[in-house]
Length: 342
Image (cartoon, rainbow, N blue to C red):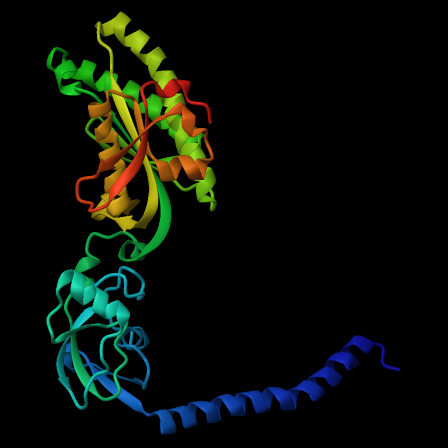
């Protein structure tokens, strides 16, 4: 017997599986040859005469990736944007008709007849294309390649804004205004972060926060509503301090909405950061604005309340027309958010 039986076992296994591995490699090679012969290949020509030869059925965007040709695609090639669009310079045969994704893009933004989405176009013959957006220029000032991509996700958005802060600032020295704002930012920021949110941006005396700490949108909704309630509670203490030190009081409004948004790295140079954009972000901002009309601290969409599983009886409900939207939205509002039970 050998002194190292494990070596013998490995040698036997190698002898047994080596022929199988060879057969697999041969099959893959034959498959590639057959694919090229029976399914054919096409040549895609880019500006400056750069050619990429790919199997028929490959999208133009995939061809760009294969050929290491920079090609913009913010949505990641899902047909959810038009940043990958190309102009068809010439073609040897007819192009496939636009699919549902392309048709939707054409109807929404009005693409010219000689333009196609590179992520959806699968040419059946040779063609020449010219990408319309130059990613090499777009990369200037961008600190990460992630800035060129985005993802769709259901996001909970909170907006907070101080009422008539300009009037407060009018009668204060500039550094006093800075002090007041920073105190307000600290109150809101600490509570938002403590409840699973992240500060997205400060807009004057307004704050936008995103709640996406968990993969469960229901919990994110609860976190946002809880943060709003606690902000209201802490603002009482801040206002007591404000009255004592500055003879002023800050009134504020908050709006919360949930829905599909595009989340990605956006900005320029050192200002690049992850943020959310889309119609539902605008809705959250509109709900915050409605607190002025309702003279209340908090307005949320009914979607948020239902997902957060909170008692709707705490609120007053209404059906409102949101600027920029055709359909009305069910909302809930509360005069004093500090009384909210989550």
